[in-house]
Length: 167
Image 1 (spheres, rainbow, N blue to C red):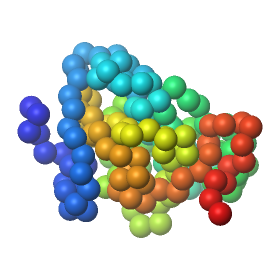
Image 2: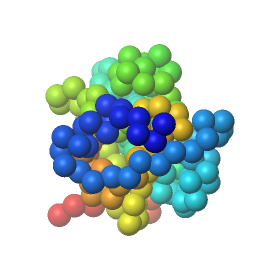
Image 3: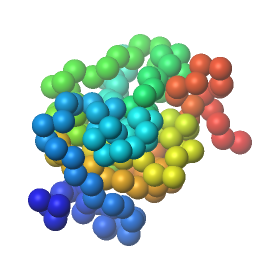
Image 4: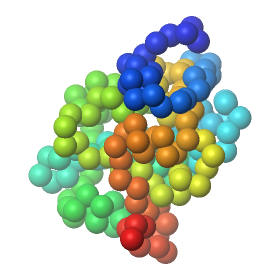
């Protein structure tokens, strides 16, 4: 089972990005916080991959630590639309090809698809993301996650700080 090669692994291998494969019992209750406990990591190190939809129908990927929630106003500013909502379960499958619970944050995005990662995640030595099959996790540096997912790093969870963190 540990040698199971998934499309997310193929994507990282093709980019030459190092990562570690980890497994947890498939009986683990869904949720990134439960995965963190099962694998012995801090809650914030396991990432929730969330799909949001704007009023114009654009869908975007938002990555935050399992112990955090995106600040609505920050998310609206990042996406550039005041009318946003979580994508439906059906919409997530339609957009990513994956069921909610183990959506990998890379390899399925069409050209021009936008992905955002919370700046707080950049402070961890490693983070974990779903590999596409429940029970399989990919452990990698946050910098490699940004590279693999072509994501934009913004403050999405700290109400006291502005959204933009760059120069």
